[in-house]
Image 1: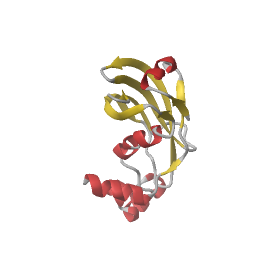
Image 2: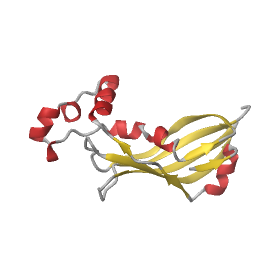
Image 3: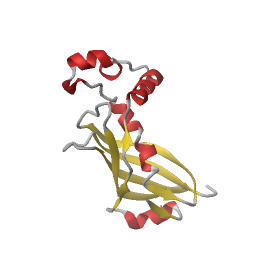
Length: 154
């Protein structure tokens, strides 16, 4: 894990890989919980029996947005800014779902800092993110995301 004191210390990491998270299992319970919370109960995600009959390998697949929603959690396992008051999502520039995440898969995040900007109260950080599926040649997701990290007292 990369640890820095303040958001301003991230400037020296532009163009560098910040790190790789640990593996995270995507199980049916997580998929079902996401479906219930979002209301997206498409059968490809939640109907295990139908998936056995109709989907490749007979497995349900995680929502693309479930995979995307895990970026803050996985990113928190890669970077710790000790002297910050808060961090917030600022947006996304690019997002592609390049391979399905089947139930029972393990995923992990690779993150690189591509841009640093001083912003009022802190720093705006643009990351290149790739979520790898264990054993797959193609990533599940590639995304460019922006986070606002506020310095303590701001």
